Image (cartoon, rainbow, N blue to C red; front, top):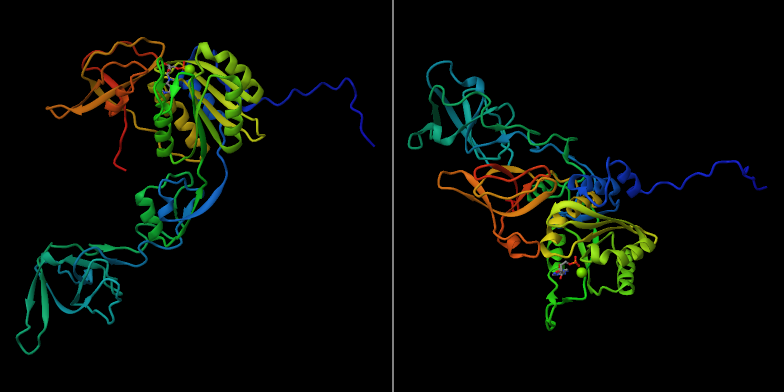
Length: 448
Ligand code: AMP
Ligand code: MG
């Protein structure tokens, strides 16, 4: 029997989408003038991590995202051992005053348990990493003792003299579990695995590492004026460089990439490219075609395929940005429509897409450090927008670090990115910068 719903039952409104909900959390939301931090918050709130784990061998886990906490199955080190090449003995044998003399009765090598008992008044020569024989708690480095060798007389015995105060009882012994205790969390879920982590995993004897599957990111460039490298550069055309910077940035982020190529400014071609991308990828990144001139036909087409917000962000470079989801295949793909200008693409990628993609792949990297250094030149800056100037950070003769912009900062001047070693971040409310003023910088490269 079917139940009839009384006609006066109020209709339940459709559930608000993640994008609508995230937008409703921003006070004074204005898509035509959105602050960088507000756009970042909306994006972050719309994204849930993919949940797909695979197991890989230790070497293949480099730069991958750890999918579960790693709990140590053993103590590291597994046993008490010597931190030095030297002599091991009972700390209680050290005399309260004057030198201590101990008889040397054998040698302990790394990887071999010392067979035998070492009594009071006795010591053994011990190598770094060798197991401490039972009862011994102290090691004196070999360079701190004087050795009395009776090799020539009948006893052929050896003794060491330890000067008063040369070592404290308990010194130079590594304790079992001092690096990691059995049952302790060695590495946390969401960590992007680095060289030290591979070593740590190996030291725990874990051969297969649970990692998140790689994120699949599809991208294409849009614009009738674009030519791919290798093609003839017709009058009024430019070579497509964004696909290469995007390739580099996505590869560095550890994504599997799907390069869809150059797509003309033609609604049917764009729609086909989006449908193809959404079927195959977790995220789609395009460049070009989101500024005022192009946005109208793109908006209509996007409304058919998913839910996308078009913004003008208070930032330089990179004002236009489209963000949302494409649902055409029934499986939502996160979408970033980046501006077309080559520097704007990179800045928008680093300050919007990078964090979102990390979040989507389940990674929790530490926030990038914002360092404060003095500005070596005056910089003009209007309050009311965030500026990302390309900078060169260098050490002065007085030993202090200072930064200066790379020169012309036009959003099409890719050389300004290539020459820079850092980004100078001038905050929304900041005004002109004078010589010697402190500014925030984010470094491009690190040690690891
Ligand atoms: P748009 O955002 O499409 O209006 O493009 C803004 C500027 O960026 C124009 O001068 C384009 O020619 C340039 N541009 C767009 N896409 C690319 C690309 N893939 N490579 C190099 N320049 C581009
Ligand atoms: Mg264009």
